[in-house]
Image (cartoon, rainbow, N blue to C red):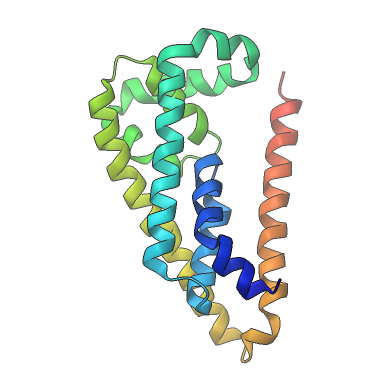
Length: 186
C-alpha cells in the first residue's frame, strides 16, 4: 500500500481517532496532508472536531458518573484534576472553551468539569464551540506549516515522507516525555 492510498483510506478516521484520544500532533499532520493534497482541509477540521468533541464528552460523562472509581485507579490524575478544578472556579466559561489549549490538562479538564456542578447541556454547547475553535486553529496551523515548508523546500514531494516521519517522530517524542514526566511525579 502506498502512502497516498493509506492516507486516502484511513486519513480522516485516523484524525478522528487521534483527536478523540489526545490530538494536536495528528491534527497538525492532517493539516499538512491537506496542504499536500492528500486530504481536504474542511474534512480534516470536521474529523478533528468530531473526534475531540466525542472524546471530551466521554471524559465529562466518566467524571460525572465514575469519578471515584477512576481516581482510585488513576491517582496520578489527582494533582492535575485539582489544578483544573481551581482554574474552573476562577475562569469558568473560558476554561470550558479553552482547556484543549492547556498542555497537560486537556484530558483531565473535561473529567474535572464532569465532577463539577456544570450542567451537561452547558458543557455540550461550550465544548462544541471550543472544539470548533481548536480544530480550525490547529488544523489551519498544520496547513500553514505545509505552506511554509513548500517555500523552504523546492520539491517537497521528494521529501514528504521524511517530513511526515519527522513530524510523527516529534509527536512521539513529546508523548514519551509526557508519559515519563507523569510516571516520575510522586
